[in-house]
Amino acid sequence: MKLTEEYEDLRKTVEAFARDAVAPVIGELYEREEFPYDIVRQMGRMGLFGLPIPEEYGGMGGDYFALCLALEELARVDSSVSITVEAAVSLGAMPIYRFGTAEQRAQWLPKLTTGEMLGAFGLTEPGGGSDVPGGMRTTAVLDGNEWVINGSKAFITNSGTDITGVVGVAAITGRRADGRPEISTILVPAGTPGFTVAKKYSKVGWNCSDTRELAFTDCRVPAENLLGERGRGYAQFLQTLDEGRIAIAALSVGLAQGCVDECLRYVRERQAFGHPIGHYQAIQFKIADMEVRTHTARLAYYHAAEKMLAGEPFKKEAAIAKLVSSDAAMDNARDATQVFGGYGFMNEYPVGRFYRDAKILEIGEGTSEVQRMLIARQLGLGDL
Figure 1 (cartoon, rainbow, N blue to C red):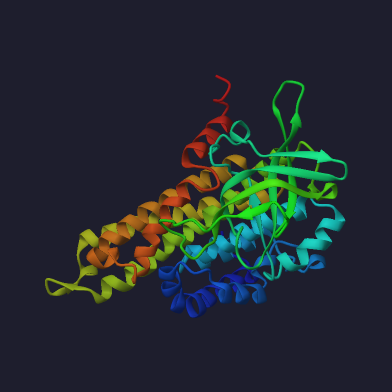
Figure 2 (cartoon, helix red, strand yellow; figure 1 turned 180 degrees about the vertical axis):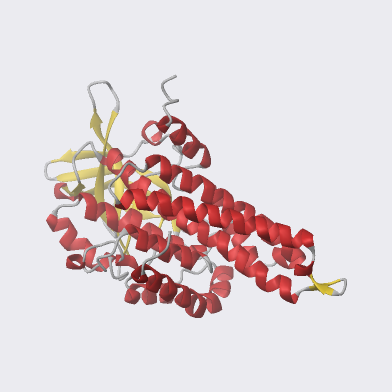
């Protein structure tokens, strides 16, 4: 797929920003586990947080593929910055744009699309994991004209920064006739009494992103903070997640490409036995395999995005893209570390960060096992 001039201009702009503004500072921020507020402000001025949102809400009027291109270029340098944008847009702003009322859109989107405010989505719970409906314990009870929320959420990105403004919370709001939980989504503004944010996790990777556990104790918000239809919260999130898998695939491709970029530079400089190490076929083959994985994964997410933008079913293609791309990121990070040898184990080198950041891509927004399950279902194997 050849990018249009508009897409290519966006890609080059974000590529230059990542190279010139992110790369020189991200290593120190990563070591300090510091959220990159200045980088976020710059990305907000560039319009990256509003790429797929219409201009009437302060967005750029682009589409989801434009967002994916930006995420890929950011992740070539650092995944923490990329996931901050991905979560803010895919999980924070897009559900409000897709399912919100006119009043909710007007209240939240103008600040979310400029990066002045970050949004988050509280779905996963400490004991839930991939079994979201079965593991959900958070409840919301309608008391007059207010929802009263009790429960907790785990691993929530962008939930505790100084500029976090709103969190969409999935909660059980009743029981259906067959006993299954009725799950709805409720918007909870940051700072609401009864809503507490734990200290940030100590993570293996993504050290510049904000990830926390949330707790709700008799947390009251207005009844009109219901997002979308009552009882449709989980279905809404599944639709959001299908799009998000393409975004995570793009981020994964960016990490995989970053591994190739770093190795190509290093093997021309590093000498061994009288030659640059890129002279040796063992190294050449390893980097060739890395390029093949990256190229294949990029085609997979491009194809999924193409079907999504055309309004065609894309659940299977999104799952394939996410599975292939996260595998490529993990494999490339491992191989890049091997190419760098001892230096690859040092955090001062980008491949050290890439190695730490890659594993979560096989877990977040649907594990690799879940992707295989979805693909099998789309092939008609689920009913056998």
